[in-house]
Length: 411
Ligand SMILES: [Zn+2]
Image 1 (cartoon, rainbow, N blue to C red):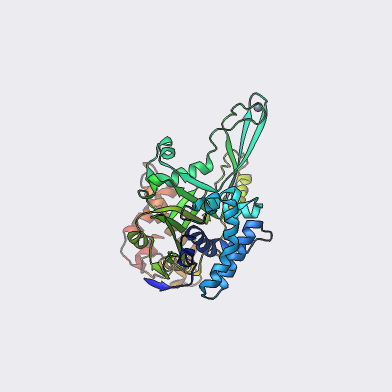
Image 2 (image 1 turned 60 degrees about the vertical axis):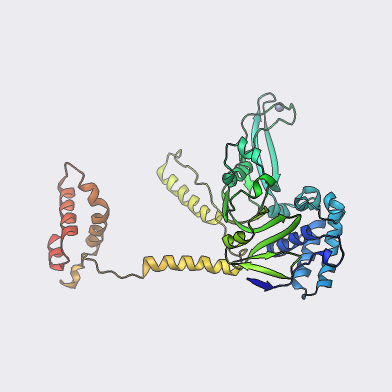
């Protein structure tokens, strides 16, 4: 569906041979996806401050192409200085140079948390007899055919490749003696708000685009994509449950109800994907080594409550439509389990027939026993007085017609 919406227009429309499509695509994505996170920061570096100002002015501005050109100029000047391919302002700008460390500058830990994963690996150097710790971060995950082949992965298994690159350190060298250390172990991984994936040219038209991927213990949702086609960059962002395709050479934008509909019309050229964190799973620690059983129970309880804390609610970050959908799913789930009233023959409290004689404890026990214990009781070759009695009561119950007099006899 065609829609009129304010957006950055290519500078070539005003100045022949000056192209801004790489920057325009970046700013559309940054304004939709990064701005909410940038506005949460208390401290910003030169680049993130510039990006924050540009995006805020953009979203607040009226639809006026002259004004948008002005808003864009400072960040374009910055990129021309930092990224070699942007200096000529021609059609040879390399989009992913924006995501290089040199461009982003020194990031604080809060800024890192938005753009870059941070992992800590630990190992041991046998030569020096000491622990070796490595902190490493990944900004953009590059996926090439040869890297996939090295991991014996098919090109459609690229999410698995990204996840393993993020969680496996490969080989670690001791900083002192330079010898390879023992097998490194991942000791901590901070999941960034966004994961960026760039596909090599040989892969970009063959790979499958997934709406959700798992990276380590976290789940990510596809929120933005950049396309390079005929030496021209365009982009798509997922906002309010719709994919919006923005081409800075066209006045209008195109809206699609699904990723499939978007990629049906624009099949080729998607090479840069932006995934946003949607959920974190957590590891269930094994407490089997604990000896004291009460101690173990308590620890398990603590572990469970921790689990709920760790599963952070990211609903604040997702757009409202998305959140509405999640609530809907929850509601449907409730309706199915709570609202249906079914007439099933079951033990009725004896107080209904006989005053002051209550059977609810035994009734509850028999209901549970008939559903859960009976199959196991029927497997037994020998039964003692109690289990025989229980077996008979439960078998007669499940085989009986719905007749309350008959059920009372059994108890
Ligand atoms: Zn060493």
